[in-house]
Amino acid sequence: MNDLTQEPASAERSLNFLEEIIENSIAAGDGRVQTRFPPEPNGYLHIGHAKSICLNFGLAKKYGGKCNLRFDDTNPVKEDVEYVDSIKEDVRWLGFEWAGEHYASDYFEQLYLWAVELIKKGLAYVDDQSQEEIRLSRGTVTVPGKESPWRNRSVEENLDLFARMKAGEFADGEKVLRAKIDMAHPNMLLRDPIMYRILHAEHHRTGNAWCIYPMYDYAHGESDSIERITHSICTLEFDVHRPLYDWFIEKLGIFPSHQYEFARLNLTYTMMSKRKLLQLVQEKIVMGWDDPRMPTICALRRRGYTPESVRMFADKVGVAKRDNVIDLGLLEFCVREDLNRRAERRMAVLDPIRVVITNYPEGKTETVECVNNPEDESAGKRAVPFGRELYIERSDFMENPPKKYYRLSPGGEVRLRYAYLIRCDEVVKDAEGRVVELRCTYDPESGGGKSSDGRKVKGVIHWVSVPTAVPAEVRLFDRLFTRESLDDLEEGKTFVDYLNPDSLRTVTGYLEPSLGEAAVGERFQFERLGYFCKDKDSSADKPVFNRTVTLKDSWAKMASK
Image 1 (cartoon, rainbow, N blue to C red):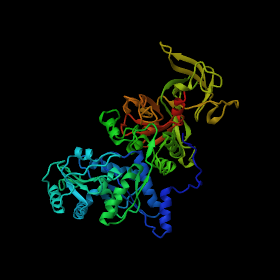
Image 2 (cartoon, rainbow, N blue to C red):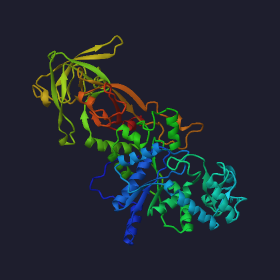
Image 3 (tube, rainbow, N blue to C red):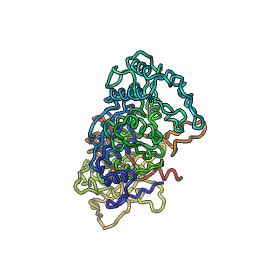
Image 4 (cartoon, rainbow, N blue to C red):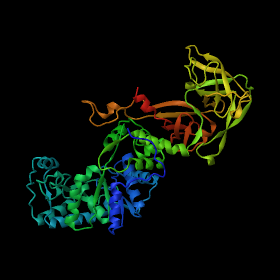
């Protein structure tokens, strides 16, 4: 479990290893910092990408450098402009603006010419083997690979075949271009890796101009070099790719960009695999990529997370060299901390019992003055309607309470938040014995935190006035999975076997009137209940609110039982 205690604002944070590298470069006289964030536009970004965004853009900003946004669009079969647009929206929502917007497809012609250069140097060849044959001939960690029968084609034949590949003379999978390195290399990625494959598919930017497309390992380093990236920051699984990254740059004699790796973000109770997230969407297990239970950035935004809270989370997680697992509670802590400062308070009742104040004059209405945010005086106050009939939370009443129960009970007294003291005189039940109404009396002299005789009560509960209450659909989201780790699952089980059946519960809540006028995306603290955000599914006559997070970590209490 992580220590969720917030560091004092003045606390000095030690440099992470990437900052140390940059500061050493600056001390040596090379102060230029150019980073890039290079997503493939084949899906929606998730919280792991958010960490990478904050790191790449944050380092550039800290050291007076620049960060590019570059789309690794080398696979037209899986990529789409929809994803390009969503990625740009996510980066901007997080608070960053890129110095240059680039695409790997911008460099297709140059990448092709460099491939021709490698062929001329005898460092690349056209292979007629199938993908399966190539896979089987690579060998294993302990067994060297087997050279392709086409490995020693002449330069002239390779140039001719590669040109014909580009011209569209061959079918998908009929030929590939491979780098000629070493089929016995201990790093299997250097056993003649594929540089180009044939794909007769329309590209979202280049259309049908190309039918050969570069592989990631070939295009990535060269794209960095073209943009003169000084710090190519990748997650740790790419460390074995670095020698290949360096090999291409060295053999082409181009700008020496360098790759650095940091530990990727792993969160408890969270699935980060893009393929498995897609499965959840396709099988309609969730409402879509922006379902508030998903770890995607657009889902966090819809749920009510703030960009400030996500940046705070990325900063607290830090930059490590070894993989680790971060408690999801840290992310929830960050959004609580941020929303506590910025979210205005409102009253809402999600499981109502009707209260009738029998000695309150019939037909009378008044307003009580409520503080919008006790953490921010500038947020001011608002007037909330009050009358004879109210809703309170069912959990705020107990017919047979234990000792030290400070909420409402028969003969007991509580204060209504910002309003009067009331005493429960009578309990009304339906035919099944369920409490449906409480008949109470109030102390007319107890408004504004006072009482007629100076008595004090410990219990304070929230409420809404029945005649003016706004009915709303309230979605109570919780963690999507019941298992902390979705790696190394039990035999015969898949990740979907650990879906949390209580990850979404929908109730009809009753809200104070001002919430009916809230804007989509506006965030509030429902007093004593949690933080909520108005959802895009809202209509004029039916607002919908999503629970962002509870006021306290209720999951930890449940898990400990």
